[in-house]
Length: 217
Image (cartoon, rainbow, N blue to C red; front, side):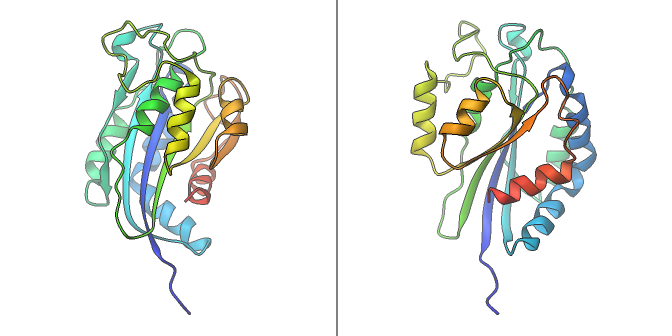
């Protein structure tokens, strides 16, 4: 029997780290050391094989509430060689702040989409995973802040065009609200796991999110 092709996978976790999100943030901290194994096992169960794996974090709150801590990003970590560095980055996430809903999720998504994706001859998958229990501001809210990301386009239509030009996949673990509902309906290669607003993704175990990640590979 022919062995499955081993995919080279880049995953960007785009994580809402406002106060209500502490349940999933804590779950990620608990599961960070087993993440590669979980992904490999879930992939094997569907006949897929993971060769190279890189992961990156984009953590966000709200530029309208507090621009100074509205967005933090890491580079890619190659797993398992940089697992310790990735663990340090994940354990450094603290759920707090954000003010009232909505949050700066579209800016964070723009940063995730502009990642330094790896390319090459082997089969590759680029995946953005958005984890949030809140809606998102329209693009541009807080643009005057010095920390506002320069890669965020002026309009939602331009952000959608950037997505269309890429070969990435998108997993939304997000409420059925604006803009996530519209993205799920209109953007290609997108899977939506609806979450309950303000619930910190309590309805999902990490294993369920990993299974959805693998489905997008």
